Amino acid sequence: MRILVILKELLFRNLAVIIFYTLSFNVFEGLKVFPDLFIFSFNLQMIIVYFYVLKYPDYLGLGHIFLAGIINDVVVGIPLGTSSLSYLVLAFFTSYIKNVTIRSRMTSEWITFFPALFFSNLVYFIIINNFSDLSFYYIELLRSTFFTFLFFPFFYILFKNYQKVISQGKE
Amino acid sequence: MADRRDDFIIALRYALLKKGTKQKFSLFFLFVLSILILSLDRLSIPFIKTTRAVLNDFVYEVAVIASAPIKFVSYLSYTGRTHFNVVKKNNNFKEEIEMLKNERNNILFLKTENKSLKEALDLSDTISKEQGTAIVAKVILDQESPYLKSLLINKGRKNGVAKGMTVFSKNYLIGTVVESNYLTARVLLVTDLNSKIPVLIQESSVNAILTGAGKSTDLMLEYLPEEFVLEPNKIIYTSGRDGFLVAGLQVAETYLNKDNKIIIKPLADPQQASIIYVTNGQLN
Image 1 (cartoon, helix red, strand yellow):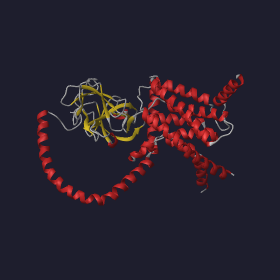
Image 2 (cartoon, chains in turn purple, cyan):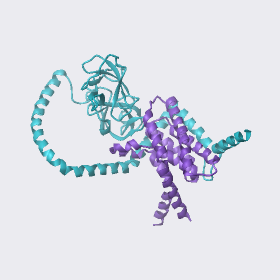
Image 3 (tube, rainbow over the protein chains, first blue to last red):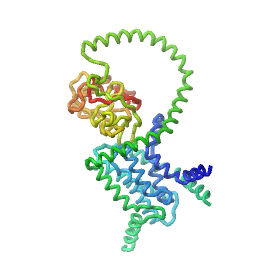
């Protein structure tokens, strides 16, 4: 019984990391029976990286970001290291924003998410174009980036409340 | 001015090199590691290829297990919707059954006629049966990312699947094997932007290149002669000009959509493919 409680706590505290790895395995491809939903497809991993590096860096290690990126590359079938580098660029940009920001507000963080996304996707774009023979679906990438940016406040509030619950549990 | 530049450099250096209290690696170290992996992946060293194949096999197997709950939810939802539509459709089916009974008689006649015609043309129903190269495989994952439209299958080098082999679904060309691991393989679908197939259009001697259009089902024809007008209901065959695929494989068909525009759709539906045949490119 005690093991179950420990396991539950462990899962609850590391939920962000678990979700991050789960997304790397592209588990939601099974939802293609709902084609209408795919219009709103967005990159939750980018939101998680940005939010946790900015707000709670102790809950999502850079090593996890790197490894999840490698897994994502294997599953999607793009050159190894592409997603990792893209996520790390996002983490770097976020870390820089964190260092130069004195007062943090959701709106300002939402706005700075845009250049962070831009640079991250730019790295993706450059690697795919120069390190592989793959062609690109620009429109899909643009749409996904747009919805990633658009849905950020929703996940910001969600993750913030979740972290609040965790810290209350700790106390 | 100099102070501001110093602040900028300090913030950048801090972001790159500083490790958090619970961080084991710095961003700089992981950047270097990612670039190293990217460079090694680009090199065609046998050791790297083997490592990548083992990694692929492992990750694919985990991905199949990890995506099982979501697939199950999708399956439940699909089954539920189907169940509620059953009563509504039942009456329609009864009428259809009567109609189909009549059609079946016609089909039986056509089947017999078809068989005799095939015998006359020296064609067979099975895929490359004589050569023994048709490998039946199951689709374990289908990836539709913005970068690749591909399928992962449960047969690899162990079963004789090699890079470059041709893949069929219901006797129609669906794609080619682009990556073969020990237990699994990746099939690049004809609907992918990176798929380039030299083709011929029915009732014309026009050669073109068939490629994916970035949508899940539509295809495009490239390098068509300027004066050529594409007509609806024409079958598109492989021309075999690449020396890779044999000539005469049925790949796609032209349709007229609601807006009176000609669209090209693959004859095999990649989204519905669950059992596929991996061959050496022969379809007798």
